[in-house]
Length: 141
Length: 305
Image (cartoon, rainbow over the protein chains, first blue to last red):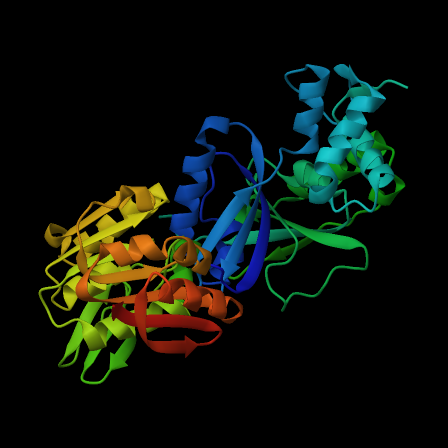
């Protein structure tokens, strides 16, 4: 049923491993949301992606019920996929582990535009490029 | 359930767009979940063009070593991304008062009464039971879940209609049962049997649990599915507390499910859908006896013509 929204909570949460500890507890508890219920539903829905960090958006309604949607994977994950590498640089900016093309950066920027709240495509591309560099992925000119 | 423990909040204002990357850097072994944005309007807003990120650490792990490791992590991130806006991000550390987060959300849920004439429902969460008074029907409901909490305007209206109209012995259909509260409420008032269905598979399971918690599981049946799941039998009472466009599309199925002289309560109709929904119900045809407005939600109550 269409209900009045009273809160929108955004988290990046490890798949299958949410707990009532902060930030889940204080963020949802402030709205009277049944925390155990959220934790169970989120973990059930993300169990097959264990090891990944999942962006999630939780809507809380006036009668203190909630629902949530899982957002697109973090840009770093999309970049690693595009570059065909399993993991990024072990430590930020220490080694080059793969390459992506400028076109791939634009493609990912387009996917992530909304989630990033970017001003425009150019802004989104700069963020994706920065993400690539920090993950040890080179952007081909 | 986690034991009460002390946590320290790590907060940073990040230029919009860069939050995901900084959140990755901020998540650490002890706390991999990062909150983006503020969860209360009571919080001081971030500087223009920025968004707050929050990570947390058990207070006993808040050490100078951890603080400097996270500072370095952000510094390396700024260098590696070559983004000037990430230079000089400042982490603010704040110990939080002790709280058992697994339980503290319950404080805001108290039992509440829904009264119509001589009868009333006493909706009570498992952790705050109070003794029902005379003519009060206790309804045990663990609130705050993904489904109804019993407090939505449309649910209250439908429960009110049940208090007024259920006499005992009825066969009840709950179309789009959600938490199952209407079917279970009717059974508690003496209905003979109830069937609920919902397109959400979790709803059928939750409804079954609610029926068990209230000791009426032997008279209730819940199935996952839409109107195609409806058996070819009729009911003395039909509840449909769902989207009004679903009521419009399935008005004839709802009519067919009603026994002659059976009554219905259809809710979930926002006032801007009033005309179209009323027309669909009337042309089913069904006879509308009452229209009850609560907030901006209309409930139609009537009988099979």
